[in-house]
Image (cartoon, rainbow, N blue to C red):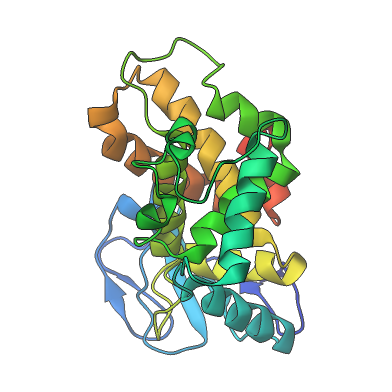
Amino acid sequence: MSIVRTQGNCIAIRTLSPPTTVARCPHGSASSSSDDATCGTPTWIGKGLTCVCFKRKGIFERICINLTPLQEERLKRLKHRMKVYFDGSRPDHQEALRALWSATYPDRELHGLISNQWKEMGWQGKDPSTDFRGAGFISLENLLFFAKTFSISFQHLLKKQGGKRSAWEYPFAVAGVNITFMIKQMLDLDASKPRTFVRSVFLQMLSENEWAFDLLYCVAFVVMDKQWLQKNATYMEFNDVLKCTRAQVERELLMDDVLRIEDMPSYSLLC
């Protein structure tokens, strides 16, 4: 047994011999052999609350998921962020919108929170608040974090400067909201029982960096644009590109040497 990713309670990885027929977790649950767990969608097959069992590279591994107080606190704060709806009447939400405009177009004055100017950023109409319904206020926070933390990459994607672009491009801002929603689904943080190893890995990263979710968002955005270019996609294919983006992000999170968001291979795409 090897001990890795220690953070208070152990994160124990145990490698078992490959099964010949039906694979059984040490805790008694069974799962048929599947290739899914080797391509970024590992499956929860334990029934307790203390371990996640998953198949990778033809073997089964187990990771303890007892949360440390730090992880519990950061997870609580992240869950709270995820449940905040955008409210155009709140001064802090209005200020966040203005901050996003300023970070995106620092040399241009915004004429109003409801303005046709917003369409230039890739919102569906002149009132961006209507596009936040699917992912909530955190999707605005994610865009603002991206704009301030990786301004070069943000502007590069906003202006569609890389590669051979489609005649029918994806709307930048709306794509960002969809990426937030995708990551929320992928991490499944509201589930009473962990159902994927990706969630457990992410919680370890969250204990290392409270902004792990926002960093993962930035990585997912550049991965999405890269997938878009590789597939020479058009807007009608956006959902397919988003599915491939999720699969790529999951694969990278499950790599043995990825202990932080910054260790993900696609993190190098950010600048």
